[in-house]
Amino acid sequence: MIRLGLLGCAEIARRRVLPAVSRTAGITIRAVAARDPAIARSVAAAWGAQAVEDYRALLARPDIDAVYLPLPAALHGRWIRAALLAGKHVLAEKPLTTSLEETEELVSLARSSGLVLQENYMFLQHGQHRAVRRLLADGAVGQPRSLSAAFTIPPRPPGDIRYRADLGGGALFDVGGYPVRAAQLLLGAPLEVVGAALRHDRALGVDIGGSVLLSGPGGVTAQLVFGMDHFYTSRYEVLGSSGRLRLDHAFTPPADHAPTVRLTRADGAEELALEPEDQCAGAVAAFAAAVRERARPDEAIVRQAALIDEIRRSAGPQRR
Image (cartoon, rainbow, N blue to C red; front, side, top):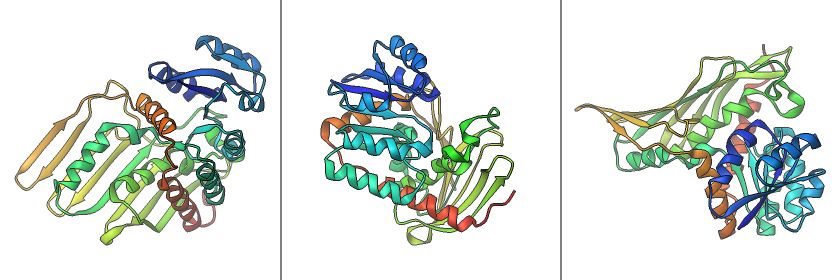
């Protein structure tokens, strides 16, 4: 049994991850720490765990094997490092950190320590993307020529941490990473940033949307759009030499959503119906399996950080 500690009681932990842990064999929540002791006690009581006075006290416990870390992005580096140095495996919400240098350092530390370090892009664990990759490998659209992907959400409530630059907020870190990671998944490496634009809200001090053009192996391109003052959109499309593939609800599908992959070719169109999956439960199960197998951190974590860093530099000075 993998004994899990929770560092921070963010909404995603309470609403999605802890319920998934409770449904996953071989892993259990053992202890909870939060800035507010009352919240830690409430969450711990709800899931049969123990409340701990602070993060360092939780990391010092010998009965904790791994931690889940849903803290604001700017705090990830400090507490991932502390957890690894305490000998704990780590599942951290995306982005792993807000800098390429820190991401490289932490991935290296995890490898040298023989510890698991995973960046929690949950959509990667959904079977709809495995189905898409099989179709592409089988030549369903011929030779891929371009990928277009979009992940946009409506504005958040005032005071949301996504609007706080000091906590690592902004659209690129929050929603932009999804289409970037999808491009890695579907097009492979290496990917390069050809151009990027970020739209900033100077009053908030963060970017609230943007677009990116990537170039990949064989000259394939990816056009990515993201933002957090938009109509909700979550999709990608691959245009190939002999067909087109489209997937909606690509990044945050509900557990009961039955995916449909849409293929269009010269001989007509078809829809491939897939079974619903709970990608959050899949992410927890994948982390537990990685801990049991002592899996090394995925190289894609560092490539992701490098692409995000390059996008920020390519976009240039802040613009409203």
